[in-house]
Length: 82
Image (tube, rainbow, N blue to C red; front, top):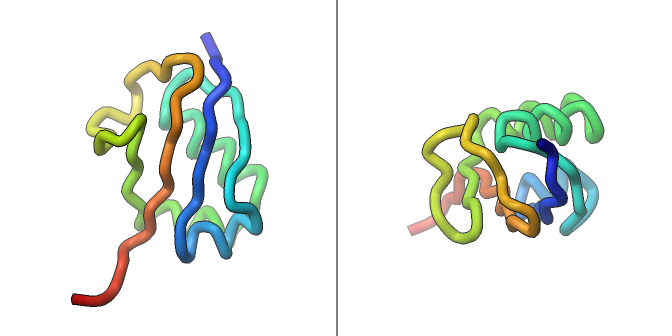
């Protein structure tokens, strides 16, 4: 069952998506990522392949795990620096 989730983009993911945050409806992280790529196009799709995802502050380990209503998903591209 799809539930409403908040997606927050950081750094290059934010630039590729063109928004800081948005609300989507998805059942799993895998479904959500597919929706994001479809909605925002090839540029974001390329970035998403290198991203890490936090689900309510914890690193997502299973992309097929069910999302709970009100979940916050952070989209984090690789960061450079030291």
